[in-house]
Image 1 (cartoon, rainbow, N blue to C red):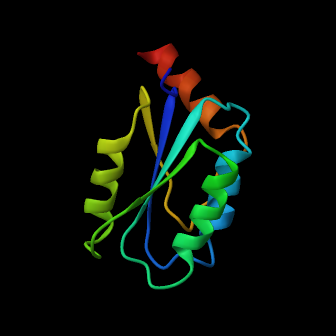
Image 2: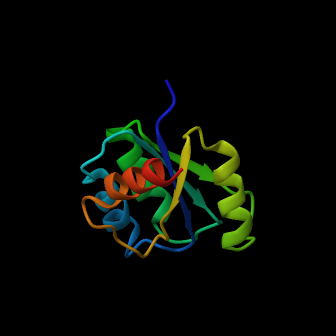
Length: 112
């Protein structure tokens, strides 16, 4: 069964932040999500961090872009891989409050 929400995260040389961004998604009060991290040709430790966290949580997927093309193409590639009914966007250097997805999904359902 596909997840309710697909979290789309483009990442480029985000080694300093990506672990915290992923942790903020994993801490959501609503657990019905997948996270697609589209690495945009990072040259730092971003890929290793995402691979390690994806090995611990099957809801996390690493998508490696063939070359650095910017956040737009990375987001688009992640959207094409997404399976959720809803899409949510989280940049690699941002964090979410623990009830963000629950509140947003409730709002979308209430307002069509």
